[in-house]
Length: 136
Image 1: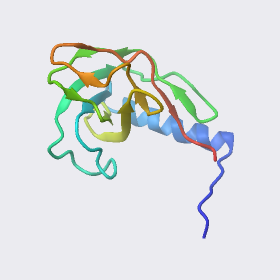
Image 2: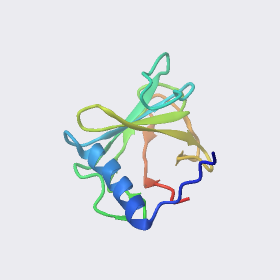
Image 3: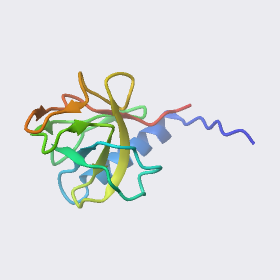
Image 4: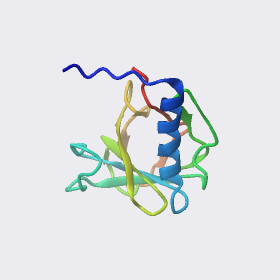
């Protein structure tokens, strides 16, 4: 059986709005950057991976979506608490429950930096974040 679902705009918009609502549950959500291998799925506990930095979403993470694409509002930067190569980020809601994991890199990933090698004490800024629920 082939797995090739194709969502309507309304379904994709509803799905991405649900992600936004989850991030806002319990207050401002966070995005924690880790070194090491990304877990198999976002329900898997973090193991030996080291948290490098945590950035914080605004209290309402985004105001609107369009056709399954959500562009998030202000994300407050931070400084790296540890040195290492950021390989993935875990998005947590305001109650510290996991919402999703994102791959980190320098090009073509979910979160891209000029360099994903963090130095302890260096500034970590996310200038924009877009989450897309694919329609095809």
